[in-house]
Length: 458
Ligand code: GDP
Ligand code: MG
Image 1: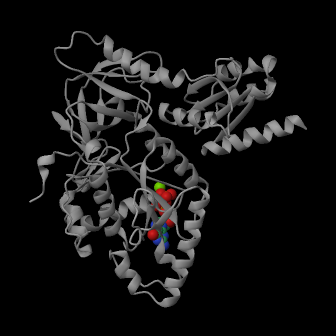
Image 2: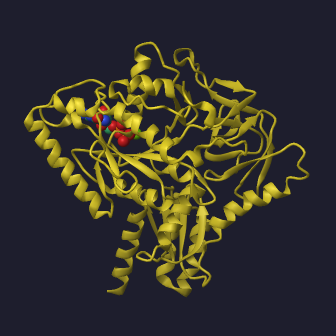
Image 3: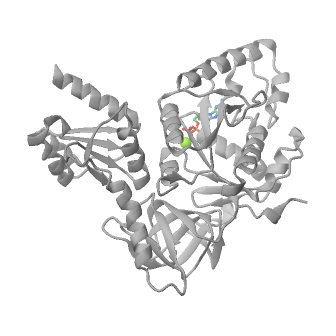
């Protein structure tokens, strides 16, 4: 029988990579197979996450004959691929994502957002496995539905295998250029130093069993300490959303502990910390077909690890990427929690240059702002920041950046990462001569700013 006595929680897994590499499809593929056969195999869809129980993983990996003891209860895969959810899964600067899948298209190799993802993973010191996706697109590929990759590879012609090897070697070289050792997982003898590559097809399912098994085996082998279940609530806000009938809600990932309906919670807000009470703990309805839009299952309590929607009053100004605190019954006051919540925000917001000279940095959430600031601070980049904000760029932000026009003209610049610029703000910026650079890849902001600096020097 499975060794549940260790009481581990499910590892949390994020999917990252360049657009169109198949992140969504891969998730669908992992989720889908059993659902189509009419048995979901215990898979539950949660808010912003999907839970795969070990039984399901064992069933799907049995062909690999790993007869591995699965010690974790399952795997919690975050549904919203991309850097947004990864950067928001944070706790005081460290990452809460236990492991990531970095998806690379075998036909395209490393692309700009692959490198962006790599940089974020490095910054947060997060383990990852490369899914080398779309192997079915190799010319002449013979479909071996849902088969382990080594078995599928044996079915292929020599031409297919040659092309595969050529592309794999090229991609391993590209990773090396980024300072990383990688190797196909079935040859990798030094996991931990060398990152594993699992060839996959999200269309026909080759390699998916390997990917699932590797995720679970690797996390439970190397992260037992981190995965030991704890009663101490550890919870982070992934998204702030308005939902009909519930007002403003927050989508959270509960990493550890238990949340109850009626718990008093403290969440970081734009102006000050928000103290409120959980009105409802919600997850999607399990029977998809019967699901009426906007209806949720209500829970009295929920245990980690889970993706949950929380409905409560006063969440309008909550900030994604911050920690949620629960006031324990019997605690004297909420002051300590308010302080903790605000400290978290201040530790990020307080990272502006002491000289008062620098650009303004904007991002959509605290998590992505933190990632942007960390990047701007790295020695090879080294762009000073004098002002920061979360959310779209408004006129007042342009005014603020305009202050630099007199001090250091080139710093009258806003670097906007993954946020919108209000048209009026854009107009005002043109009028005043404030530069506004936008990008959804952090280092593109660096490129744009550098280009601008060079043009000034000329
Ligand atoms: P995302 O942007 O990374 O989420 O990529 P999607 O999952 O939306 O996939 C982008 C496109 O690639 C879609 O047309 C998919 O059908 C296709 N695609 C994804 N995975 C595979 C694969 O393994 N094989 C093939 N042939 N196509 C794929
Ligand atoms: Mg997608």
